[in-house]
Amino acid sequence: MRVKGQSYHEVICGPMFSGKTREMQRLYRIFKVCNFKVQVFRRDIDTRYSATEIVTHDGIPFDKEDVFLAKQAEDISKQLQEDAKVIMIDEAMLYNRELVDKIDEWVNNGRIVVTTVLPTDYRGEVFGIASELLAKADFITSLYARCMHNENGIFCHDPATRTMRKVPIKEQVLIGGLESYEPRCRKHHFILKKEKSN
Ligand SMILES: [Zn+2]
Image (cartoon, rainbow, N blue to C red; front, top):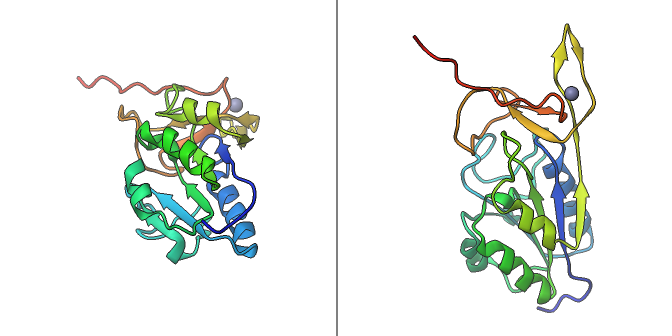
C-alpha cells in the first residue's frame, strides 16, 4: 500500500438512533477531502432504504462507488482494494468472530478501520462480537440517543444508551426503524413479552 500515515481502529458505539452511521459518514467525508481511498462495507440484510447505498435514518448517503456488500469477514477481504487506506464497516457486531482478527491484521498493515457497533441487543445483552471489537479498539466514540419513554405526553429525554424493541419478536436481528425500536435510558428499557393468546 502506498498511503502513509497513522493506522488505528475506531469504534463508533451507541444504541439505535444515536447517529452512528451519521458519524461514520462525517468521518468518511473528511477522509475523502484528504484524498484517502475509502471502502465502506455493509451486510446485505439491511434494505430499509436502498440496496446499494448506506444511508442514515436521515437519508444521507455515501458515494455509491465506495459501498460494498459483505456478509462475513472473508467477503471484505476478497473485495479489499490494495490502495484502500480506510475500511469502514457498518454494524460490525453482526459479523463472524474472524472480523476481530482481520481488523488487527488490516490495522497492523497500515490501514485505518472505522466500525459502527450496536453494543447491546433489544434485551440489553451483548450483541455478537461487540465486546471484543470494543475491547481491542484504539479509539471509541460513544454516542447516545434520547429516551423516548412517554408518560402522559411528556418524554423522558434522558440520555438513552439502550435500544428497546416495540414488537414482541424473539429474533436478535430485526431490521426496522422507529416503528420497531425506540432509544431508551436504563430505567425505561423494557423487554416486551408476547401476550398469551387464548
Ligand atoms: Zn427514560
